[in-house]
Structures are given as structure tokens and as C-alpha cells.
Image 1 (cartoon, rainbow over the protein chains, first blue to last red):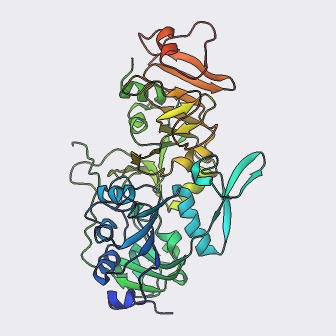
Image 2 (cartoon, chains in turn red, purple; image 1 turned 30 degrees about the horizontal axis):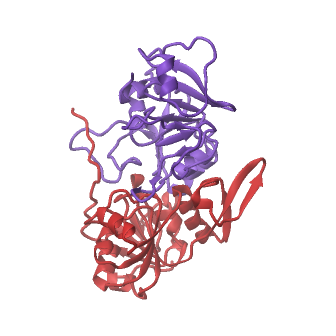
Image 3 (cartoon, rainbow over the protein chains, first blue to last red; image 1 turned 30 degrees about the vertical axis):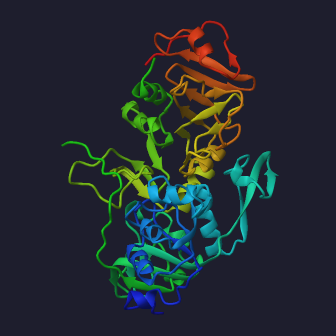
Length: 232
Length: 217
């Protein structure tokens, strides 16, 4: 067994520097690497580029990094729930690259899986395709999209073992699996870190080979953005 | 004239037995409330769930189980969770039978704009561009005119596009229309709405072929 476990968050984020590009898992606030984000705030790392489907809310998730003006550029598909984000974007303080959600996921997966680029129909004929190569296949037009290049991936799983194997829960899986192994260093934080051999190999969602460092996360807030319920 | 629930109710009649359906945010979400109970349908939410159920009972919300609108949800028997790549594989690979989404503008050639108002509102396209570029069967749920009364069914979209030549059917508060080669073909009128009212509220080429029936809800 190749050990991926690190004991401290400092060790997990070792090598993080100003100006780097990070991938961060999560959809809205669901499945975000809360511990890694908190540590990035603490480290005061600046001028970073974040690849993440959303930008958190004003006072949680990536919103915490935005408040401190640590993010230079944001690559996302939807950024609607964050006033500070909108302010920084409209004032030009923050560079923003909006990418269709499926394309964003695939650009991560391409990086993980050794594809330099791929064709997708998403965005053809829109401003997303401007300046990009397009090509017809079987009578339909496609846009060439390139794989992301990132320094660190920060992902969050429900359970993981010392070998870096990951299991996700519910819709907290989202972008996390595609980001594993898609950056030079993948750091996974988990709610439950167990000894190798404890997880059933049949139930692993992400094999440990895609994870460089894994650590036991703590104090998960798991904030709900839209609490919708029905009466009993 | 239909309200939002009326539009959703009319669209629900388009949902057929055995369909996998992706519902967008807003009016489309309401469609789930009106689907016939005797047919089998599974709702896909692009953040990674197939077989979405109703909202949870109070106290049973789970932060790890949400829909694409970030609302807490439940799952139905037979449901599955998956990652974003798989989710958009379902969409791009045309495994989802019906996509229902909202729009700010639709053109007579089936172009759709729903993600950006330059200088005013830039929330992002989310999964809309992937959905409209891939789906074979797209129904748009929208108001026929904007708050100022100006048409939203246009010759050409004025806002940045989400997709080109992709919308097949539109259900508004006034009418059901099909996008054909020549423009918007009027299929049905909303209860109490005349053909003249629809003509006045539409900018794009409107095709009126014979008697236009009133919607049956």
C-alpha cells in the first residue's frame, strides 16, 4: 500500500504559492473542500486562479477568498449567489472566465486523463466559442476546448482511506472526481479517514492513484444554500 | 392568460411515459408538480442526480443532497448519484429525452438567450449551453413579453446567445408555439387569449395556419 495520508493541513497544502492555479471541487456549497479553503485564507496566498463551478456565497466557500482579494481570476460556470463577486467582476478587480458547466467538468477530466483537448457542441455560435477552433462532425458543429492546467486540486470526499481511495456521498460528488489527478498535486480532505483495507474496493469512486495527499478534515459546516422543505 | 403554474401545467402534458427529463430553474421546476401520476418519469438534475424526488420533510434536509438550484431534495426509488462528467455525458450524449428551460429571448430560428445581460446581469450559463447544444427535444417556458410589454419572441435575439437553432417548442402565458423553418408556428392559444393578442405580442414571424385551438389544461 502506498501511503497518502498526511497528519496536518499544513503538510497537505505544502508547496502552495502566490500566482498558482487551483481546482476546487463542489457545486454551490455542496461538497466543497472547506478545510483547504480555510487554510488558503490563513496562508494569505495571493493572485490565485480558481477553477470551480461556483464562487461560493459572500461569507462562505470561495467567498472567503474573494473577501480577502486573494483571487485574481475565477473560472466558473455560474456565479449568481455572490454579491461581492459581482461587484469585483463589474469593477474589473476580478478576471472572470465563464465556461459551460459540462465543458468545465470535461476540461478537468481531460487534464486528469491525458487529453490535450476535445470537441463539444456546447457554446457553438455563442461568445464562448469566440477565437476557438470549430469543426463539423456528422453535420453538427463543435468547439475545440482545451484541458485545464492546474498546480493543485482541492477535493472533498465523504470517506477515504490512507491509500487515497475516495467515496462520495449524494450530490457532494459533483466536480470532485474529475479534479482528482487533474492538477500536479491533488489534496483530498475527507469527513472520515479510515485505515487501508477498511473500504470495500467495489465501492471506491476514485482510486488512490489520482490522489497525492489525503487528510482527516474537521469542523465541517456543510451549509445549505436553499433550505427547501415540505410539511409532514 | 396563464400564470407560471399554468405554463408548467401545459408543459407537463408534453412529458411522456419513460422520459428522462431535465428541468431548469424557475417555471420548469414547477412542471414536476403537474406530471400525470400514472406515468413513469425520472428527473435529472445536472449537479449529479437522476430520480429526483420532492423536497424533504422539515428536519430531514441533507446538505449533501441538493438539486441544480441548490435546493434540498429527496430521491425516488431507483435514483442514482453521479459526478459532473457523467451527468453531462447523459446530457451531451442525448440520453436525456426532454429538456425544459427558461429564456429571456428566443428567435424565430430557434436561437435562445438566457444567461447574460451585458453590463447588468452576469450570472453565468451554468449547464444551459451544454443542454441546449445537445438536447433533441427542448421546450422553453417563458413569458411572451417582458415587464414593459415588449416581445421576447424575436426575429433575432438581442442578448448574448446561449445556443443557436435549438429550441423546438415554446410555451408562454399566451400560447404554445413550434419553431419551424419559417418562424414561430402558432399551435394553441391560452384560455381567453385571441390570435390578435398573440400577433401583437410577437415580433418574430408568426405562422397562423387555420383555426387555432384553445389549450386544454
